[in-house]
Length: 67
Image (cartoon, rainbow, N blue to C red; front, top):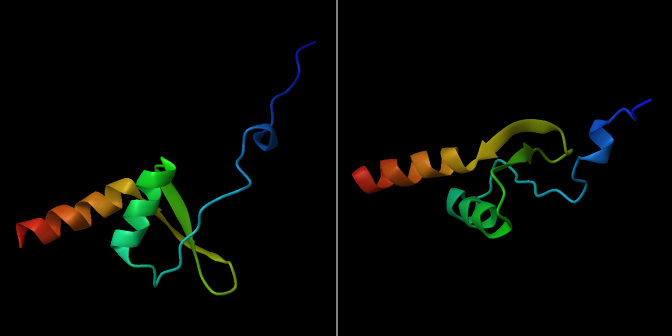
């Protein structure tokens, strides 16, 4: 019989999080330094309010460079 794989066996527990007030440039640097594609955004009570991805950061950078 094969062992069932669970999410718990693969999940990361030492995660990077951001707050909505985190500056986008700082968040982008952290994502690049940690070599991660995205991170949760949490409020002051640690409730999930969104996900920030490298793609989101690149959109902001490209938009800023355009204008």
